[in-house]
Image (cartoon, rainbow over all chains, first blue to last red; front, side, top):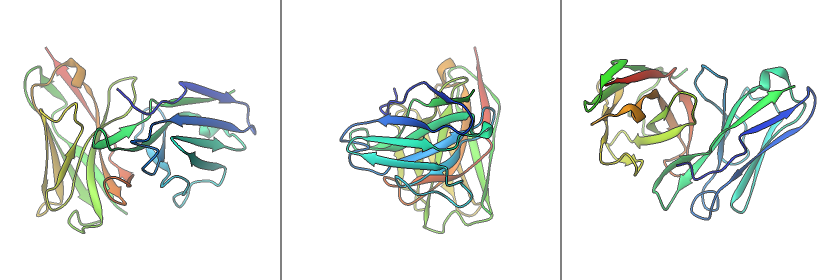
Amino acid sequence: QSVLTQPPSASGTPGQRVTISCSGTSSNIGRHPVNWYQQVPGTAPQLLIFTNNQRPSGVPARFSASTSGTSASLAISGLQSEDEADYYCASWDDSLNGGVFGTGTKVTVL
Amino acid sequence: QVQLQESGPGLVKASETLSLTCTVSGGSISSGSSYWGWIRQPPGKGLEWIGSIYYSGTTYYNPSLKSRVTISIDTSKNQFSLELTSVTASDMAVYYCARQRGGVRSGYHDYWGQGSLVTVSS
């Protein structure tokens, strides 16, 4: 039922740059900020990026994000083994009048 | 440091009501600077937003669950709660409570509970 679409998987070797896309519509990403969450399997999600491109204290600078129109993207530069996790985008949807999460992307470090 | 902790039965019978409570520590639930929300995750699947509540009692619900869900808040106990009626196997999930900063439409969940697995039995 997710209205934000992400690729199911992404991968890279240590040190590489990986990007994850999040595709939405004019009723969500086109109007509202996007947030990103990292979830290591078996643990609760953690806020990674808020308000499109802001990093909370403690999040490494190798994580960055941007938005353009009805899409958003998350980039991980200098991929590290500890970055292996699931990543979710999230926003608000005016048509649903509710919060929405992306379908999730599993990042694998080869 | 804000901490959230979910509590409630881990097993609910089909057609009955799921009830969970989230206890907030390290900050006041009625500070007015945050919404408080519930998110769930079925085993092996993605995250689903359930709803949010403000300390005043204003609520927002996922339209797909709206007819069955109630989120309430008890500022005297620094707790907020989730009730989901008429549960089925599709409601089996890990349920997370979280603090939402920045408003309900532009906000983000910055603190999460550890999650509570709810199993639905037939």
